[in-house]
Image 1 (cartoon, helix red, strand yellow):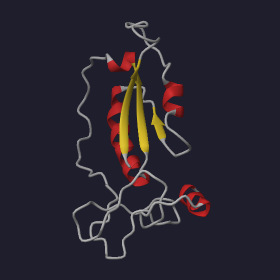
Image 2 (image 1 turned 90 degrees about the vertical axis):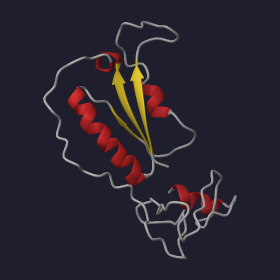
Image 3 (image 1 turned 90 degrees about the horizontal axis):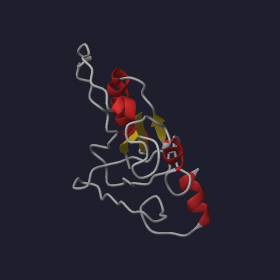
Length: 152
């Protein structure tokens, strides 16, 4: 499922060096999670980049249905700065949803790009969401061929 996480880093465990900057959480962000799955990490270096990359992070999270981590260090998190107005042109984020799924909709369909169609619950199609290994139509399975097809 799409998710955007903001990770504001500072050095050391516990209170560490609360007034210093650091990037010790990079490995945490790179290797967080169980198993192999795609994820994206962005590390903006300015407030302007924070603005643009946050929008880009949401777009990627929805397009690829994967977590995206936006990492900032303490220096950037604590900045106070006057900036020129950002480009506030309305550019909607494509949520990559099936808005009118038909009766043959399957949540975990095997696709060429590896991203299954996503629909909202409550519509005409039955939307199955589950955390176990499953067939394309959402039934639980432990079959190796299905597992390989789902992660490849």
